[in-house]
Amino acid sequence: MHPYLLLALRIITGLGGMVLVISTLSAAIRSFVLPRNEVVRLNVWVFMGIRVLFDLAAKLANSYERRDKIMAHYAPVALVALPVCWEALVSVGYTAMYWAVSEGSWLHCYQLSGSSLLTLGTIDDFSVVGGILTYSEATLGLLLLTLLLSYLPTIYQAFSRREATVALLELRAGTPPTAACLLRWLNHDGSVQNDDQQWAAWEQWFVEIEESHTSLPILSFFRSPQPGRSWVTAGGLILDTAALLFAAVDGPQPRQAQITFKAGCLALNRVYRFFDTKAGAEPTTLLADEGESAPGRVGFDQACQELAEHGLKVCEDRADAWRRYCELRSRYTTALNFLARLTMAPGVKSAG
Image 1 (cartoon, one colour):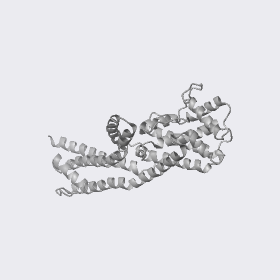
Image 2 (tube, helix red, strand yellow):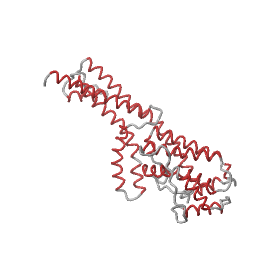
Image 3 (cartoon, helix red, strand yellow):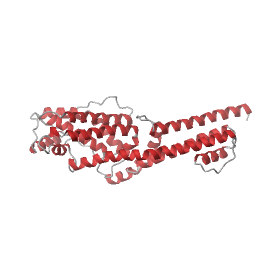
Image 4 (tube, helix red, strand yellow):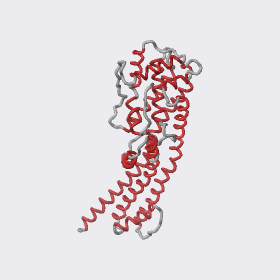
């Protein structure tokens, strides 16, 4: 090969390797250090590739419990795969740079890159420039691994806080959990409007969901310890309870419940928009059929009857209450159903 052509090829290869290393390092920093939600394409490709394999395995399962057990491994495996992919790309990038500075054949450059990245020290035959690259690669290798290890406690702390609320909600909402049952529990002292402390706790939960599940999106796929639980289902249950309270119960609407409902709608819709780039900037308004035979109307009427039997004053105009309930649910139903499909959550139901 002509010397000038070889020189040009080495320069292009070296620059390409440098870009690959910088892009990988940038992806790692944006994943765990940047304190805001940002889609990292490299991570998306890793997660999607692993998700395809798990989806194939889940399709072979003959029950939800079996599928849940399979998918419970998805998030941990994907999380551990991230630094493996990062370091593999860094190794390829440095291999190109070693070759660009004439450190030897491609095989020798690959061995030198692997030795430096993993700090094995099995190869020490390199030039001054090669030595600089070797130490920088060893530093990056340790940095990438440290980033994940240092943020694992943060991830699992957020997971534990999320699941504590999910478990407590299950104890209060019955089996199977329903909005009517939860609303009855809130009415334990005879006035459902007075339990601001519980609504405030749920508001805080929604705020943490929005922050943690967009800045650390892999958290969305960490499944609850029990197959029947899901943070998506729990979020929908809280919002359904608020919607049922506002639409069906005759009386003043608690201000804290209104704030919690708004926080929940914002949280679910922002997590939804993070994962679905085709989603609109605002929640989609989809009003259900207002007729007696509309899907969910029978369950809504049964929920109202149940509330009335337990001492709650229910609105007499049931059709108008149903219209208000449908309008309120339309603010989060699209996001709720999308996230339920994405995370393979247990069935999401409305009030009834």
